[in-house]
Image (cartoon, rainbow, N blue to C red; front, side, top):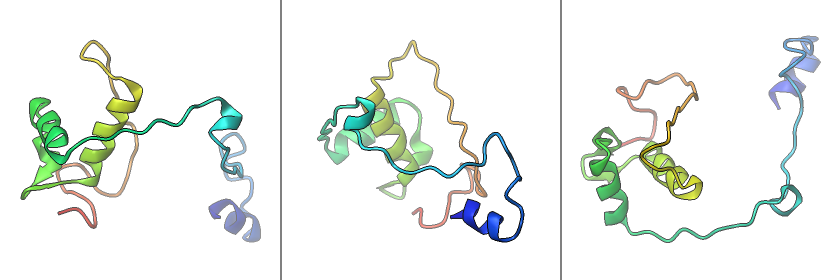
Length: 102
């Protein structure tokens, strides 16, 4: 949508290498098998606390970012010997929380 707005404003060459329209692909078309991950809330809380990620566990609630880290680690089978970098940026830092977070 942002790309469409840029085109209407004549800004379609904003970033020729990165600014492209994309559409969703089905899991099957890119060779990914769906997996169901069934976990309890206590498993998620224990994982966050064990990993010193208690900033994602506030006032008795697990934040969306905490759930994202947990399920990413489960689906990608991240192990202690792996290095993980969360390079996504945003308007809010981790210490500030984000809108809608408890």
